[in-house]
Length: 158
Image 1 (tube, rainbow, N blue to C red):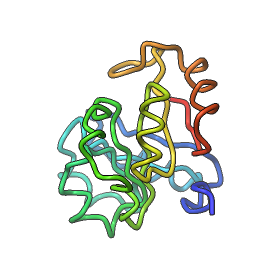
Image 2 (cartoon, helix red, strand yellow):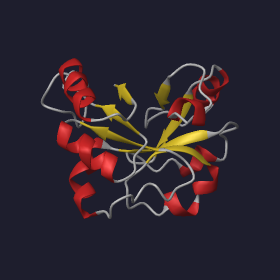
Image 3 (tube, one colour):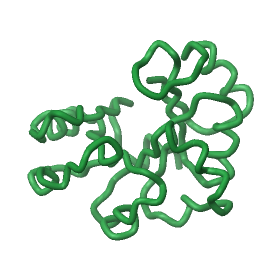
């Protein structure tokens, strides 16, 4: 079963709610349209508005965040941030396979992609250098081609 069918997505759109936006309206609207709305817990503590989310949601969260285990029953998808790729070496093999929801990992190299696959990630999000924040030193389109050569995981390009 593919991640797209597991997520019941009609359009492969993943919307990351900006950390400064405390309103869940956009998350709810994206989900209504068939995409996935993501609350960014890696950038800010968004717990004050999480109870307002009326639809299944995703979280962007650090791999060691206890939220993953405590609130896993409410999560539709988890995204591990690019800035945590160096921590992936310390995790046991198939660390993310234990969750009932899919885990995507933001990556910026083929090495990251291979680590993510060994950890049980169900997909990748490529962060090319045309984006902001923590990104790969390589352009996203070039990185997409490189990563598709080494993995069969579904890949999203940010």
